[in-house]
Amino acid sequence: MWVKGLILGCAAGMAAIIYPTLEQRVIQPGDSAPSFSIKTDTGKNVTEKDFGGKVLVLNFWATWCRGCIEEFAALNEFSARNKGNGVVVVAVSVDKNENLYRRFLQSTRPAFETARDPEWNIGASYGTFLLPETYVIDSKGQVEKKFIGAIDNFPELDRLVKTL
Image 1 (tube, rainbow, N blue to C red):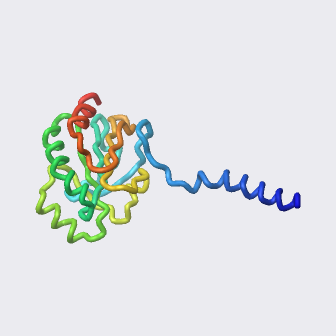
Image 2: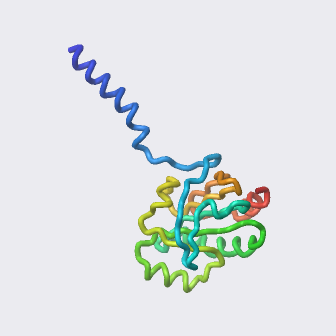
Image 3: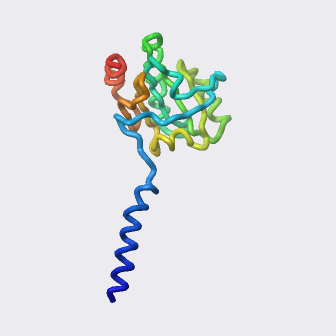
């Protein structure tokens, strides 16, 4: 009987040690932004380090995501309003269907950098599993704010980037 208890105790102890390593890390405000590299639709190779001295608004989205589509026009206006103010917007789509993605961009003509990450590698490194999701990253590479779901308060975003 005591052997069974010992085995169960050891198994529970091992599970307590191993389980946290199996969890995906979810980036939160105060964390350093994970490294990434992606080629934008304009042909630029972009990394999180390319924005030294600027604030990066990193948005994860998809054409099949209703909230993403609703947010897209407002994100476009935000980007245009903040052009030249040390703010860069990069929207990374997780669309697998490249044709649908390209048609959407042709119809919306975004005023910011866009890229496609169909394998969801960059979003996964941030712990993004809901769309849309937006990270505001300061000039030193620290995540200042995380918006889960469509941003419905762009004045808050405007105030935040002005303080950074």
